[in-house]
Length: 429
Length: 211
Image (cartoon, rainbow over all chains, first blue to last red; front, side):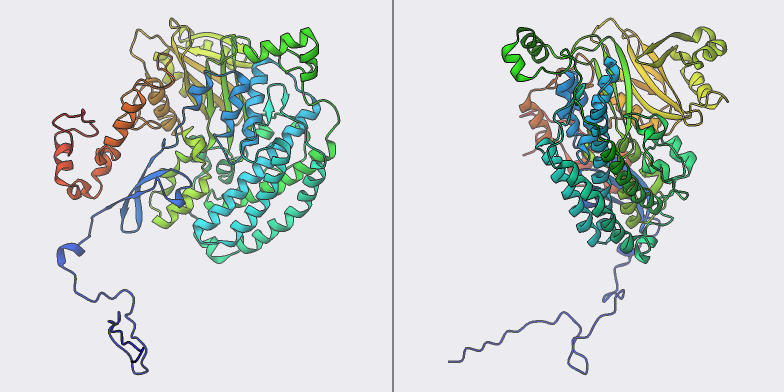
């Protein structure tokens, strides 16, 4: 009995050539004549639904695209799939209880959101924080900007077809995440700040590890620079794509790298300084063409500048308390609350009633990785805000997407959408 | 107080209401009928040049007697100066104000969000429809104080509506006009659209219930 079997199969080609290899059908040649009515696409536009579950839309963004061949005629974005009602929830919470909600808006840079919220509430209450707290918050903000830009760089490179930079940038981001975890106990839901101070001081060895990171990071950055900045494919996919002029960028209320790539030198850290940013030595990179490539260059240089700020902050980090010495705002230490009557009363009042803010309103913004992140509070004198408004930079930046992608190719739409640097947790809130 | 307030009073007189300083920020109230001209003047006049609309939002107070407020957070990129402008909308009159989209394209989505969350209509907005909630959302305007935290409908009703949402509700009529996409829809969907039933949620057990 023979174990051999003969299997018959049909070749997917038109036959074999003289050397016995399968013949290839040249690309672009139809084997059959198509029926006339199906192929007559002249003047017909196509409706393409992109998302909400699509990796190139960076979350749950949905785009309804009108296509003429491969050319985008119109883009109609649909947002709101991740709407969580954070602003409504904030009206039912004490000021310190809002901080965990801010982790979850722009979840790629949670520490900066925590800082922004604390700054806004402190402006509302007229509190002045300690010097050590100020410098630690600068460190938190710059670490956040770096991880936010690293995610942007990696995912955008993947969208455009380069896989390797993604691994390098995520490796560096992982090391920052380890530092965040050592500081707050959480990698993503950091809840770092409290009104008037911080949840915790940095642990032992933190500054040494961050210094070492600052020393090593530029070499990774130069590797990414080497594979992307002068890469022919990268340049042709990004240069001259999604151009916005300076006037348009201002008119669309864009902020952050999107605005600066169009040539407008507006950076909240320089123009409405907070946390003593005016005392740090750093440059604000500005583009000149307003295209995807310039947005890449601006973010790239911001990574270098943020590392500079981190080094300066580490060098000047003073000793001293991280929290205000004010028992109406900051919880007394547990040992005091258990032994001292007055401390126990303050503890009880803060936990049960919350920290109250005077009647008034305050808008405070910071330069986040995505752009100008602002929090607007209206208080009626109770411990819960009447209105908590998030000024969402990526929501406003995204609103210029239809303007940028009209007339572009469908594949450019992916690059343009990536260049906005959206995070849907913040767009939808 | 920001010197722009004096300039506004001089130019517009009674259309400018009270002005106050809160936490270091100047807030100035406008008459809603003058909103468009005043904002235009603030944007274009040399010496003011509030050319950057930072944010546009609304506030409703817990005191039910107080009017709603539409808040414009302005910033001058030339002079690096902020100004907050507010318009009061009493609740007994229609909640309407002129759109700022002709001045700033950035106001487009921000006004849609205020419309969605507060039910304030912006006259002259090119495309005023809900943005964060879906277009067939029927529970009201979530950031109003009379809107309960968990929504108006019960959780089971919300789930039922979500599961019964029909495919055509995900596309606006304008979108379905692309490539005459309605032509490719199943017959029953097309018939519902022709009857103008887009996004109507069938009652349980009713005649419109699908098998």
